[in-house]
Amino acid sequence: MKKLILIVDDDPMITNTYKRILNKEGFEIKVITTGVSALSEAKKRIFDLILLDIGLPDINGIEVCSKFRQDIDNKYTPIIIITGYDDPQEVVIAMKSGADDYITKPIDKSILIEKINALLI
Image 1 (cartoon, rainbow, N blue to C red):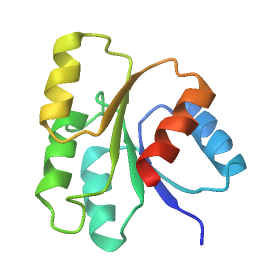
Image 2 (image 1 turned 180 degrees about the vertical axis):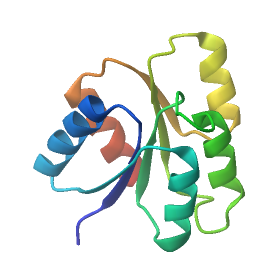
Image 3 (image 1 turned 135 degrees about the vertical axis):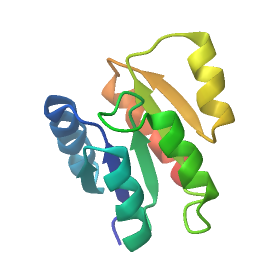
Image 4 (image 1 turned 60 degrees about the vertical axis):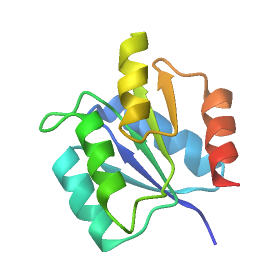
């Protein structure tokens, strides 16, 4: 069975790129553009991994990550923060909110795939 990855990012160019890369790797992808919608969707289905941007149009990704960690069904779902913020303090805040990894944009596709595979083992 294909692993299901939730991509939470409001930039269609970025989500289409991730979707294309990850589909080629055999993953099933669901794209959501807001934090509120992502939290709602995660109540309906369990994802194997979440790629989460910090800069969302409604609530920021750090808050979304914290809420995922408070939800019993998503408490242990791997979360990778993918963002344009390259500030060491943001990395610390993201990790404290429950993120498993933090990648800055632009991302090398091979690094993205390796990080995802490492968390899905």
